[in-house]
Image (cartoon, rainbow over all chains, first blue to last red; front, top):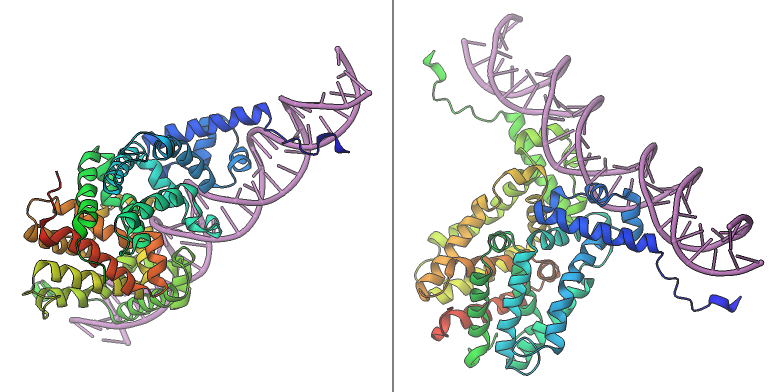
Length: 206
Length: 206
DNA sequence: CTATTATCTGGACTGCTGGTTCACTTAATT
DNA sequence: AATTAAGTGAACCAGCAGTCCAGATAATAG
């Protein structure tokens, strides 16, 4: 009876191996092909497993993409939470925001197709049952950005403006420039917007 | 021979009738259902025509969505080009921009599902062969915004920043707020960003 | 080392999509 | 009324995400 009550039912060895194979195959395919050409069947074939396995592991296309995104975002999350300023705690909000967007632009430029695939997967018929903003990475990023904005300019609509700034990453004209390696240009544009918004209290939002 | 050399091969009466029926049916369906539930088959059925007719008329799903968007945007385009200030010519760039984004927010809030469907259609497999930014409405909007930014602040990256500002409209968290009728809130956020960017030359982008 | 069992696996299957085809219908013209 | 180019739409196609379940396999018990 009570012998394995709290036994965490760890993933079997072959399951773990296949999970990695699938993640690495998806990563590789997304590095070389636009997201709409990377079907789950192709990922499964490239990983050397059956399609059912992919769904068994990740639940849905969106689940796989979220997992891949989470892998990439983990390092950035660490740097924000406990790393050195200006990305980490300690610097002025303005500088932290500029540093954050610079980092995100770089991340996005290195994973352009993944970002697009992730976005696209969230809109698909079946996956749409899952709440859209429930993505933990997005929630974390949004909380970080809106918190810093509110800290520097309590009178503006930080929550909404944070969505707006983060939203730009998913826009196709921006994404294509990121893929082309122009992340520094984008970072500069972010800096312009952020400094205009936060420096020298440039009139309230009303 | 030369009897109808330059005859513009006008659309036949039944074709024009069906074109309208299709547009109105798509409009109606998008008013009531999220875009991923509005398939071309459903549009065709609602319009009382066959699926082939829809494709014959509009070429693709994206073509239909672009046509619907164009209908909505035409009025705004007129107001910008020849209407009274601040939307039309004559006012300061800052005020014209604020007026433009206010108008666009209202437009988007009244056509939320259409905006999303349009965006979504541009990413679909087959339609992806068409260049993404070739959408004339987007081009016009982008030209307007980047022109005004450049006029007020020649030293910033107006072209990219215009993409960023316009991009926010397509972001899901923003779109859902627009659908909920919060267009005034969004307009205020736009105003905050635009005034921060353009008023009192808040340091260059470099 | 064998037996047991719960988990994992993968290919066949479903239901749906955007898009194509082409024999047939119909509006416009003579 | 005859002609004809354009319009039409149901059947069709390829490809997708996601489901199913009989059989394979890793972990565990004896």
